[in-house]
Amino acid sequence: MKTREHIIHLTTLFAGAQMLVPLSGFSVTEAPAKKPNIVIIMIDDLGWKDLHCYGNPKLDTPALDQLAAEGMLFTNGYSAAPVSTPTRAAMMTGQSPARLHITNHAPGNPDGFALKGSSLQEAENIRHLPLDAITIAERLSEAGYATAHIGKWHLSYTARGEGIKEEDLRPEKQGFDINIGGYSAGGPRSYFSPYNNPALPDGKDGEYLPERLADEAIAFIRNHRDVPFFLNWWPFSVHFPLQAREETIKKYRERGGLKDPVYAAMIEDMDASIGRFLKALDEAGLRDNTLVIFTSDNGGYNGDNLPLRGMKGMLYEGGIRVPWIVRWPGKVKPGTTNSTPIISMDCYPTLLEIAGLPPTPNHPLDGKSLLPLLTQSGGFKRDAIYFHYPNYAFHKMNRLASAIREGDYKLIKNYDDGSLELYDLKSDIGEENNLVTKLPELTKHLEEKLNRWLTESNAKLPVNSKEKQ
Image (cartoon, rainbow, N blue to C red; front, side, top):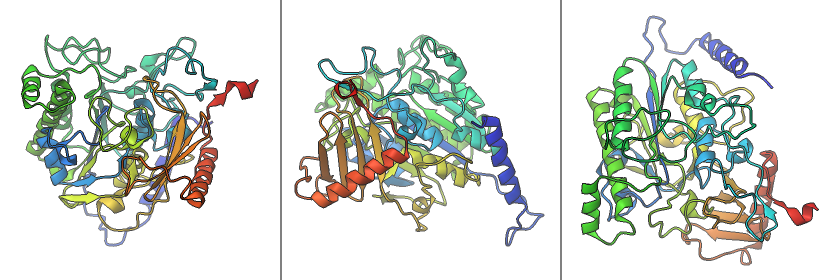
């Protein structure tokens, strides 16, 4: 296996060779334009319908509504997985959870690999992002970007006997110059200081975590306004524990008609912290040269996902369809809506192209650059998107499964009994009508295609212990 340093050296040589090629219309006396700044905001457990701009009139999210009005809102945006860790790994590498063998939230279920009374065992699963993975932060560093990770990481879990310390797998070891708050935990111990987070010093008692992380994000962009920067801001919100400002909770209790007023308050408080950051970006004169991507790591768990079926931890739409908003002044036309299916792995190749970087050698990608969609220049063609969740979520209410979406059709393959489910998402977004018996040829086509992808990805599959004997 090549070392990380060797791989990065190869990409540097490749990039250097490209620079020797004369560019038409470019004057050697011309100062090169500053590379665009990049901000990724990935919320935790935010469902597809958990924003006002996604059609939820019960929630107030003015900052994100404005971001959508100033950019492009995707109606068919997906997370790479229905749980946190694999999606985060996919964002960092551009590779699918199936290829990475990082398919479940870390550390997974503490009481074994099978449900009680079941012979179906979970697939083998890596619980942290290996150091030899080439992250987007490492690649952007090559291009002169200052890099910072702020918030949840959840990619550094280690168990006894694994031979590596958790702190050696944190963001600062994966290409980030700065790490504020990122370690192995999937959620904060508290949203109010003291946080008891080994990567985040406590603030004064009662300090609110979303505000604190916004402060840190604002400080980073102000301190790096003269160089291109990559800010990977992954707030812990809106993951458990459900905690928000009391005045915001009171507002939603009085409003009524909500599944959980505290969860609604968390969303508004999250939105307010993002709004404050976006205002600071404007005040620093950075808006016009900054790409902002907003998304979620998986579908909702605490809110109401209707009309979608299912929730976090499931391969139904409620577990994997998430908000996606992109703003890039001068590049992305304001107020546009896009229905093209996109997925977490698309971030990596998109950011490489934006930064003018060549592909990472010996690093197969499972995503596509979104630039043709963002700039509406045409040329974006997608065959299908795939999902692989051969593990039990923390709630154990899911079936071990894989899925494919091609066009408007989605096929789910269940591993407990080998059954298939086929849905037309255009006419049946709630996945109520299984079309397997009505469309047998399409079912066969999609199953064969899904099986080929699993083989090509070297995906780990669940094992039936009875068949194994």
